[in-house]
Image (tube, rainbow, N blue to C red; front, top):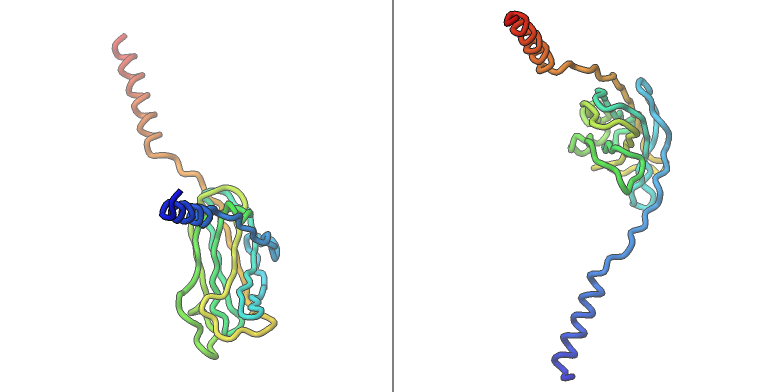
Length: 182
């Protein structure tokens, strides 16, 4: 074996080793609690040692339900954001929506203009997860900055398909024609 082929073999071995994926290990999600329709809960976002810490809330809904999710920041430095996922296992979550105003906090100003909200029809039946987090926040306090989360769910009502009336009409016409031929 010459030196050139040994270099190629070594390079191929290093490349193969680099391409082998390692198992990703994540800490399990710890929920702050369950939120029901009509509830307003209070939480806080911690930022220990400059790292992010998220709050997690869960609720159950049916496909076709109309949901309104609103975050209210209670401290001016917090730029609150949230993500809505279907499921409670972060390995198989499906992102449904996210709420953020994409505007940094205004120093010394706490108001409704930077509070995230989303509303819409939920696509799945089952458990949903809301992840609350700080987006472009200023200096957060060690105790965390406080927020309120509000959830409203209005049950969906089944709507008859427009084609159903057409099918019934065609059936009646067919019966009328069959009777007329006799």
